[in-house]
Length: 148
Image (cartoon, rainbow, N blue to C red):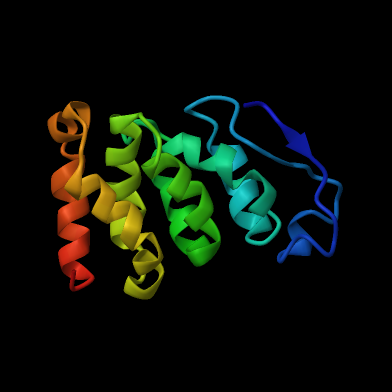
């Protein structure tokens, strides 16, 4: 996951943070909070091409980078939906649990509603792993908040 990329002035909302030639990069490991700060400084839409890689860092809520990455995804709003959808449609129940807990449950209701069909799928036909990991309960609770 160690991908480096140049930030250009039209990609970065906070250009002052990058004017000196700094590079925005993805975390290299679960302790790489500097990379997360660079991503936060760049903001959305500069991070858009990398959201599938960024969302991977909430696969374990115990990692030091997980909470700030979750905050970044929440602040991205609807832009994070495709990456979150990939997690919810995947097979990693632990990743789904933390994505639901740390990101989806904190999204504004109108943004979380964009995942309505994915949440319903998790509730209506969960795998045994999803039941064991608490994905079913989290998805159901979010649906209830959405009025479904």
